[in-house]
Image 1: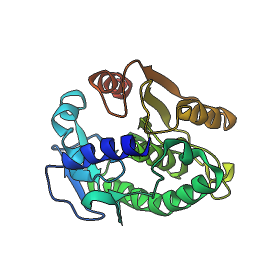
Image 2: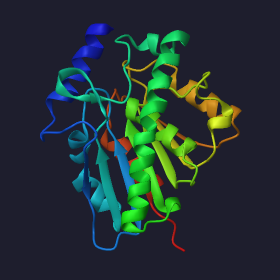
Image 3: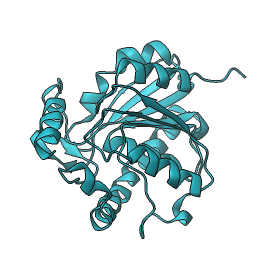
Length: 240
């Protein structure tokens, strides 16, 4: 399991095509954007890695400013991390290990809240027109950002995300918003806990927060074309 995780994560790190710095945010901002989307990278990656999705995102999300932040903490392979994670998937759900992950995640979610404030102030985009999405540990960060942002964001999407669980640091009182939520996971994902999908939905159900779920057959720890299509369908903005 450890070898498999290392091989997958290393492959992700090796396809970074742009230099990145800790806490750097890359962006694409069209003229007079009405919406904004913050795309959050996974373990050992960077905002530059997620910016590789810019061309596809621009096609399905017109009038949307796109932001690709890099985590503030150094990670493996020259990349960055929102929080440290164990190499074995099952250990992510170990109580002591998860408590530590969540403590670090909540520390760094403030970085994403600050970015969202900057987007609102600089571009004049209403908070309820700002969405967040993320891959792997970025998936958990997207949910945390959406659920703990006091201004009420639009949508939050987790691709192949680390599970969302309440802890002594993330209590129900810390949940102050309920954005529209989509959780996407592959049934062939061996990097995150096998029941991550179930754990996250049970947490949201306990909080009385509805979510949309998409289990994609044959998808491993990745964002496949099928996952992107489901994401695009979810993100289509309602016509007033």
